[in-house]
Structure formats: structure tokens, C-alpha cells
Image (cartoon, rainbow, N blue to C red; front, side, top):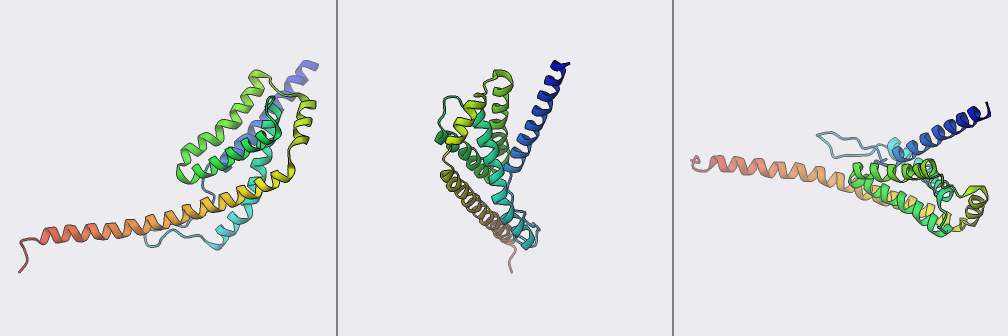
Length: 195
């Protein structure tokens, strides 16, 4: 009976961890600023969409950073706290950059790291243990965590702003080039038919 309870507790724990990891990578792998697109107007942002993005970004960065710090700390035997912090922030910064460039690659990056960590836990059983986890977790430089957290928020706002400008410029470029092309075709058709 005790073995059955252990298996059930482990199964529930893994289900919860897998769900949290799924939420992390699904919220990290795409551009979060909602755009209103139409053929008649350049892409734009509504006030509600911009406010939601601005208010949710710090919350999501906190969530992503917390989950990755906890998971990497749980499996990092040979890493010091500074390396753990840098690794978690690098995953977030890379995934957020790729979310605005190529969402498919961002999806893979945001998914790969948590799944690898989960695999290490399941297959390798390489947890550092409670004492090692507490020692490493308490040694994390929390003043730097705040700086990295703020830097990740600024990074996300910067990347999203550049992405938004690119979306608008692309729309205007398509409109202009379509106009030039149709004028060139019209002129080409008129050659030899002018009065």
C-alpha cells in the first residue's frame, strides 16, 4: 500500500510539474502584443491590448524566471548560483527574441530546456537533494535576480517594439511595392498603344 501511495504521489507531482512546464513554454514562445490587422490599415495595437501586454509582461517574466531557477537549481550539481541565474535568463531572453523572429524555433527552445530538465529528473534521477537544493538556492544572489528580472522586462519591451515597427514597415512596403508593380505592368501594356 505504501508503494502505491508513493507511485501515486510521484505521478501527481510529475503531472503538476509537466503542466507548469507546458504553461512556461506556451506563454514564452510567441509574440505577446496583440495586433489588429486588416488589409486597409497598417497593423496597430488597441489600448486594451497594449495595457494587457504592459501589465502581464512583468508577471510572466517573474513566472518564467522562478520556474526555470527552481528547476535548474534542482538538477545543477556542478553549477554555481551565478551560472544558474545566467542560464535561466539566457533561455528566457533567447526564447523571447526568437518569438518575434521565428516562432517555431522559439517554441522548440522554450520547450527543450524544461523537457530536458524533466528528463534528467525522471531518467537520471539526478536531483541535488534537499540539502544541496537549499544550499544552492540560498546562495543565489537575489540582488542580481532583481536586476536580471528588470533587464528581461526591458529586453521584452525592446524586442516587441522593434517587432511592431517591423510589422508596420512591412505592411507599408507591401502596399508601396504592389502599387509600383501594378503601375509598371500598366505602363508595359501601354507601350506601342499610345496615341
